[in-house]
Length: 402
Image 1 (cartoon, helix red, strand yellow):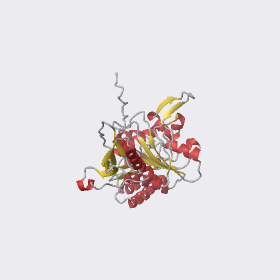
Image 2 (cartoon, rainbow, N blue to C red; image 1 turned 180 degrees about the horizontal axis):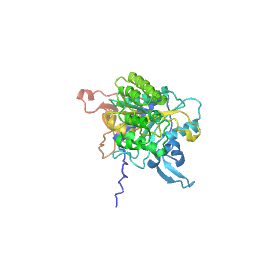
Image 3 (cartoon, one colour; image 1 turned 90 degrees about the vertical axis):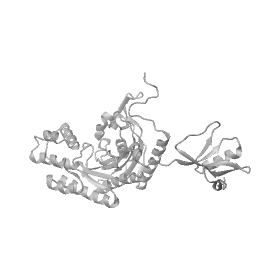
Image 4 (tube, rainbow, N blue to C red; image 1 turned 120 degrees about the vertical axis):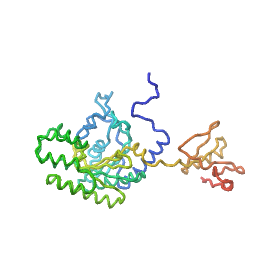
């Protein structure tokens, strides 16, 4: 029999020090998005399954927990991604004519972990721009994503740029069923040249050569020049390459220490993205942020608006972002004395953390650092530094008055 305290695989409690770190990051990122004009929304964790998995959301089917609603008998899902919900809010609840910027931060649940070390309950932060099809919105989404990582003090940063239109341009005029297209995209993403050769054997010499070239087209800015020479000279390919160059130039000017790379064969999420896509890395090998343009995300809700955005897992970000130092706090003895209790209330009202030592207890905490204490001097309660030199302790600090 399993112990009652054991949690399911890839599910974990968030303990005080980590929770404080996550909350500090959450506030920082929401504030940074607010500085760009993004409005915070809080979609429900639970929705009708057909809403969560409609349109491009069907790729999430295997990662979505499903259950039956006892009230309606309909199948419900626990969200595995918040982007479809943001699209629903934009399409049906806000229904604005112009640009809408939305951000969110909340848990998502995955029926399957994305890798052996991943949580099945990520804390997803994301931002979406609806209603603008231009490169300017693409640039704003990428800049906000980079700003969020800088706000979390994550350095150095590398951004990899790609574009789903490159493969669409290469395959222009080629007839493929959905499964064949998905297999091609997967082979490209894994740079599996043998599988790619087998899948493309009936697609024509120019297409086969272009697909093989995509597996080699990754690196720095030289990749764009190489792609212009090796890929078919088709309008969609040329447009994608030119726009990737434009985005890279602007990002390099805005973030001088950013390393910009390209991976034109990275077709992960090919069925979801409609244009530019990006991944941002820190020192680790896994991407901290993924995003791009997905103009079809709102089609199922009856309002097919242009859309671009990104998301990240706050828990993964917290593992690489510097943790905050212990919060300053004031130590106070427990007492029924009205004067002491009034002082404690006044200090808390001004935003101070006052840790009252309960009778018989000696608090142990990694979250708070009691650098001051309340002591009684000449019948008055005063603040005094702890673990300081005698002359420093002899000079009490003023306590706010009501």
